[in-house]
Length: 334
Image (cartoon, rainbow, N blue to C red):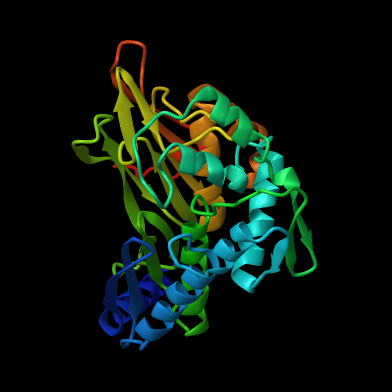
């Protein structure tokens, strides 16, 4: 590169640093935290708009908000007219349900409730006959989107979008920031993230991947740092929501086909995808698949552009990691 152009680039980079500032917005929503970092010439008044997004999302998809659209659907016998939030989440949910062979299924709500991981918490293994009865009403094949309406093909079907709605919230906030002319940001809602543009050092945003211990008592320091280029990131783990009965640990990730609360050796799965709604949906899928089947699925579906990282216990009880080739390409080289 000619010296003139090198000096010009250096000058532009220095000027960019001198005119841009890092701004941070923090708060609580959806039962968790959120942190939004953005780089701009001056602070943008966007907190009210962000709060409005959270409120609208809760009114649409929160099981904890009485009268929400999702609660009305679950309580009624036929269906509801969807808003734009529910419509986007339902279409993505049905898409992932099909591609995953039914491993991602939002009609899992009655099973979540039975295992005590729903709105009303308890620690009790449900009877096998109760699970068999519940499974008669589980299956996204019993859902029908007709225009802007969501209908039930079978009475008793209920949905729980907690495995995907938070990721979608991240995407909606990102769209809002972009609409305000903010081109460089990192949005984090309860550990689900998405980036755009550059950080304050004019480099791609980076994040650390935690290495959690399976006993739930502690989280090790980051074992890897990945470089993002506008992607969404989501993590599913068995180290936060679980209960033990005897020597078996039951976690909140429930297999919609068998009705069982998962208790195998996977500790956590991190998924990087083109957007956060996709990452959030597929981290559940990869968790249920397990390490080898999950990595094989990622290889067989390059069109999904998924990068996957597993932390798991091997046969000797040692904590290990495995990841896909696409994830390896994201690792920050030291």
